[in-house]
Amino acid sequence: MLDKLKHSSFYYFIACASIIIGLVYQDFHKVPLTGGIIVLGIIWIGTFQFKEKIKTLFTKPFALCFIAFYLLHLASLVYSVNTTVAYNDLALKITLLLLPVFILSVSLFPQNKKLLLLHLFAISMVSMAVYDLYNSFLEYETSNSISVFYYKNLPHLLVGKPHYLAWYYSFAIFIALREIIVVKKARIAWTFASIILLFSLILLSSRAYLFAFLLIASISALVWISKKESSKGRLFKILGAFAILLGIIIAVPNTRERIADTFVELNKLVDSSDYRQTNPRVYIWKYSIELIAEKPILGYGIGDAKEELSKALKNCDALFWNGNKNVPLHRKSLNFHNQFLQTWAEVGILGFLLLLFLMIRPFYIKNQHPLFLIFVGLTLIGFLTESMLERQAGVVMFAFMYPLLSSLKK
Image (cartoon, rainbow, N blue to C red; front, side, top):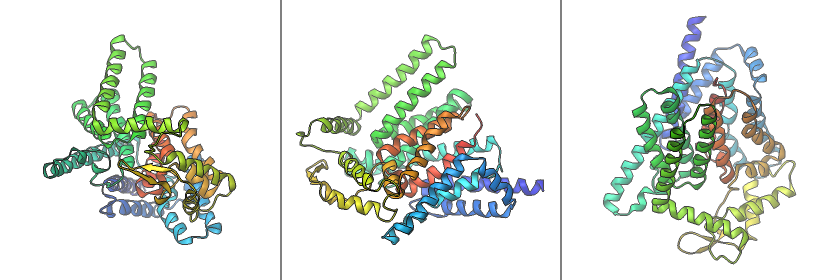
């Protein structure tokens, strides 16, 4: 029996590692990601003890929350008119049901192996960052345009997904920082890794995650200092690091321009005479809230919510500044650009509350692992500006990392 459990633990670990590798190659090769999930399922079924697994799940509020969240999406099929879109969305989000069940109902490998998976994730992110920078350099040699290093032009593996990649990199930086500050092993290698990731994060110019990283890093630093007998020297080092980081962010032209656009967008909220509108979210959120107010209990169903938003935006005469000219907002195909609003519009207020529970509850439970809280904090900020669960890159990352990290012991 012990040999069987040992083998199951090994294969479970390999399957999880395959999922992490699959996050890097998800747009090109589905085998590592899909194969890892399938192997997890086979092992979960093959180890039997279903009664004990179900009992374990009932002791895990986060697992029950994920299950209920997916079942709400499934139930919305009843009142979704566009069933093709609904079935596609259910297929996309199936890992929100499967991975929490597979991970939280069993304990097949110890804490050190879970941390090893996080190391693999961070190393994979560094590899992806180096690959992207190298390919952008090759493009720069032929085009002589510095823009190949910025924003949507930088990702070559997760093409056109700078927001998701910034999410990945932000969390990977914190994993590296933990190794440097807390574990204190291979500090030179982890320092080099964190520099590459931070440099790539700045070039990606994801304003939400630049803000998220600075905010979470500041809070983490304050918590860390409060638990140590901090000297003035240590405090000045931390403040100096933040000053250097802000200086680099301001020095990078593309990132500086996007931050300047943020102030334009904020000004748009109070000054409607400003002719530029670089971000349609102000209007999308306005029309989203009006839609939700019409059907707040059940929502419109996962098949129809985005279509209803598109219909509503046809009445919007706002212009979207695309960098060169003003374009009518209703000509673009848009989602809700906020996961909380997206979920509420799709499956109603219960779905919104379940998602809110997953984002808020960890901060009220004692002795949660710092990396878990950091991940939730980064995800929460990302959810405020993007519908992160509308793409595989967001769904699998959330469905895998959340249960894995929630099972870590402090």
